[in-house]
Length: 394
Image (tube, rainbow, N blue to C red; front, top):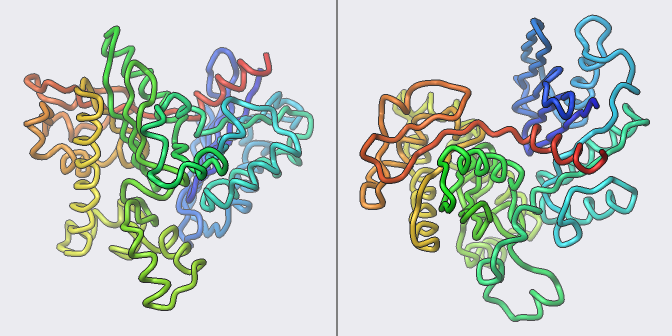
């Protein structure tokens, strides 16, 4: 069964075409830096490996280009759109409406659109991917896999906000959690690697969007993102945690509208607001050349991660392993180094030589004397989505 997986993120699109249940990758592709003149397009199939730098302004434009590659007469992987049996879509916010993988209907799309207000950088491109796929692959079953599903196990003390009870019981205002597909995938890999019957793990997903999850025996118990994917760690263009009094001051004291504040905190803050760039590769390059704003932003980024590690270790009353994953977590040895610096008290000791080595497989980067395993695990949200899609429709 051929399953196409679409993962439309806040600034990127990934796809993989897999033969299931063999878990064989037929082809894959990616668009990075959407919205920039120098967006990067990648497509890979067998010995064909394409990389282009092209201006891609929108997710719709990026998806259309990837689809053209998929069905290209010479480079493509399928001859006919009917060859695709199912399309699995990563959807960030499913609220309380979806606790499991779901076949997409018009009603499901309406719900995804409804939650766009809570995930404005994610649900709209997720929905665009669905609508384009419906046109390109009309005979395929369209399936949604929700990031929020992994957090159904969080206890109420971690999910509930300290506001009047009716907002929780009547309006469903609570911590929903995000990047669940990624955290689920890498934590299962870590548990298998550790070979323990019980485990306490912190999964650190670092990309343009960032989050951390505390996981006990494979079940999520706390998470850094909340009602919407905007708080917690410092992200590409999102501020992460911020005193809500700042929002009141922006509106009441500085004359910003609520919509302007929303745009500011979601699209103009984070690493972009601190440095002028949301791409960590650019920020690290400038920091190495002495840019003080970039150096400070990197320190701030790592400091926020360290605070969450400490908090989650306390909440779980112990820690067996931390996981670095996603684009930045897997590739930035500098962020890993800064996040693990001076953490000896918690038993976290990074091996600087192991940390610098590049690899696309699970690896340890801790010293032999470290009480806590420090793991770098490449995430594979697409494979996890394909597995869930296959299990649903087969």
